[in-house]
Length: 500
Image (cartoon, rainbow, N blue to C red; front, side):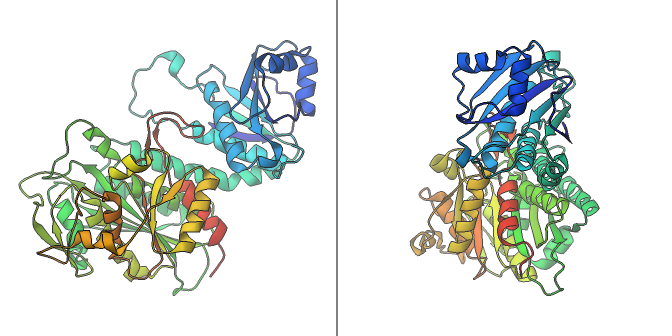
């Protein structure tokens, strides 16, 4: 769906959308539309008991006196509480019923809202951003579809008194949307199409935006001594890859310390020899969700020319059962030199991340590291699909991540780390084992990862419950969510751009 900007006016065609604050009444252009229809809008408001609350909407079809085919009123909530997330969600909720409605064009009128902190240009841009996020659809493999289910809406015109200002406000948001779509596309691809080598090839495309992309093949991975990652990969016919993506937007010197993002990229996870049940195994195509988020984030940062030095490192493997697969009781040597007794080959993500975290820390000496991984089913039991689990050794980083999550609607819940949990990883045969038993699974997984970050500020996001949505949300259609792209982009924008 294309986004365009124009001055406030009654459109000659398509759907007309008015975002309204709670209890504020109709703004000037909406009043003009109401008069043209002989009061249809006010009668619809009264009949639907529309107050302008968040999530409320009312639609008037074929309004008399207007060229618009329908008018949609959508609530923003109380004026003093209108923030970017409220406007984005309103944009997504308003556009959703129009996508396959037969409409080809829609226009939203962003007029001043008395008492709101956001101006009309910002509202226009944020509304368009939310609409664009909701318009996403992964349909590249569909060859047949009922006509009424096909999307028709091709264009949204965001109208404001100063369309140039709205266009400027939208530009960085458009880049973030492209990063979100990159992640959603990667997570949605089937595993016969997306595997380590093809994922790495897709990441290479970021070089068009100025990202320096380096792909490490098996030979280089072996030379680096990434024995834990290689152990996971050894059962598959697909060769592993490690991809390094660097964005140098701060203009700092060669010795400047970047911010670092690390992603788990298991492009399909059978569990290996500790094989998973067949029911639901098809979901394991998105066990590369963390790597997908890091790739989308790097695209967003480069696309909006973020003034930050950032590095993204992703480990890409398949975890398959075969005659060469890793066995329970194998011992592997990580790049750090620490040894791990592998008691469960389905606890593979932490093995991959152990090497990639250590590599990122020792090569780039970052200011902080955030890793993302669909790491444990137990975090889904604990938090469901509403929050991702957050583990960290740094309170300031935690505060900033949680605040960014609230601002973007990508919510985090801090989980504990403690020495008592660490003892659950003690092995009789190696420096540690890769599982801690049935209890506290997400915590012992994080404790395992912490052994490879040393004193670097670090956060681990367990996104197993939030990577794939089973139902629509305002700006997230059912399917791949790209949870983490907007959150981490917000973290960078608010705290790390243009700063040493």
